[in-house]
Length: 106
Image (cartoon, rainbow, N blue to C red; front, side):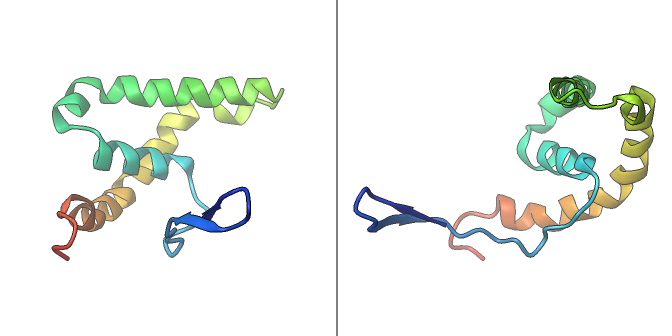
């Protein structure tokens, strides 16, 4: 991606790696974000709160667009979380090294 000034000259760029892009459950992104970006002590105390906040925000967005909430009950969300979590753990573990390594080491 390029950021251009008012004259169209490129002034900044950002590399975006889309090799891991997939069409899958949004819960994968939630798990990945929480376990790669939130301090373990905070997760220990507030994981359930974060998951509930995510779900509530998701449902609020569905309501904003007048979408049917039937398929998105809390029970269905929890069921999907239980199904997706075990496989997303592998993804988290694989990515922790590049995420946590100091720049220039790898």
